[in-house]
Image (cartoon, rainbow, N blue to C red; front, side, top):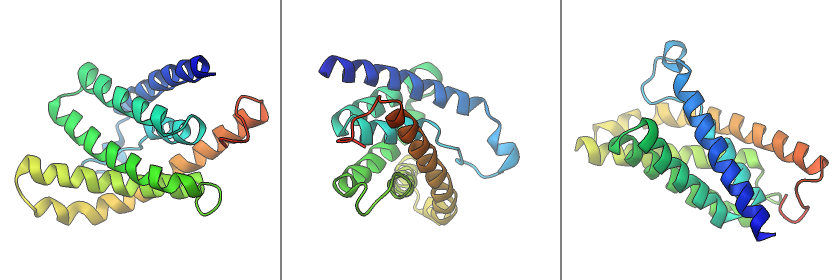
Length: 174
């Protein structure tokens, strides 16, 4: 069972990295002219891993994706922004995980994670640019993040349902 989970984690890391790259190719700024706005496609994989494989694998997938993404097509700054938002989002979603399916759905967890991600990135921006003025942009990022977080959660629910129906996921995890 551990070997299957490790293989699944490896595939999910590759998928998250591919989605992050695909997202970088989409000229979203032409449609939504707000700096820092993105779809968060790789977060679908992170949330999926959290609810299907557990927190250890999800954290590993997130860390590997952030490191590889920065190494392949990013920078030290992009790594700092990615890791600060990603790990705060993961922390929030891990705290919600015990009540997944009881109080929270994947949509709720994803929306909360998206909000935490934006907060983490704004704090990173404040340190990076050495100004608190960046906090004035937080409401805009939170609004856009909540919408993309809800969409990410919906896609995750669809994927979980499909894979469960096909017999790839156990009832215990989903």
